[in-house]
Image 1 (cartoon, rainbow, N blue to C red):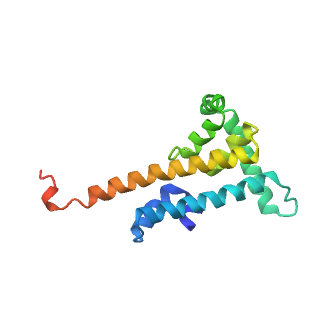
Image 2 (image 1 turned 45 degrees about the vertical axis):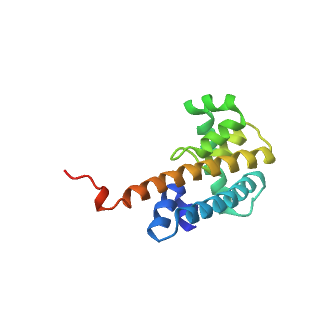
Image 3 (image 1 turned 90 degrees about the horizontal axis):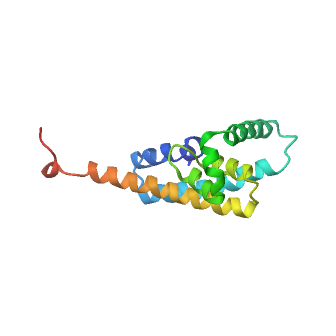
Length: 151
C-alpha cells in the first residue's frame, strides 16, 4: 500500500509480486488504494484547509500541475472527449493516475459524482492493464527449461 500511495501502480505491482502476493491480490489492493486516494484528493482540493500548511503546499502543487495540464498538447485532445478524457488519462499507464484524472476533471468543471465515476473507472481500467501485463510477464518467467529457447 505504501508503494501504491507513494509511487503508483508502476511500483506497487512489481513490489507486490516480489513480496509474494498474487497478481490478483496486488490488483485488488491497488484498486482499493486508488479509490480511497480519489476521495481524499478530491476533498483536499474542494475544501478549504487554510490552517494546515502542508495541505496548502499540496494544493499549490496540484493547482500548478492543473494549470500546466490545461495548456498541454494532450489536454487539447482530451478535453473534447469530456469524461472519457478523464477515464483515458487516469487509465493510461505511466501518463496519468488519480491526481492527473482529478486535475483534468477540474479543468473540465465536472461535478464530484462525475469525477468519482470517471476517475474510478479509469483507475480500474489502468489496474487491469497492469494486471494483464503482470500475468503475461509471470507466464513468460514460469516457462520451464522444456520451453526455453536455446541459442
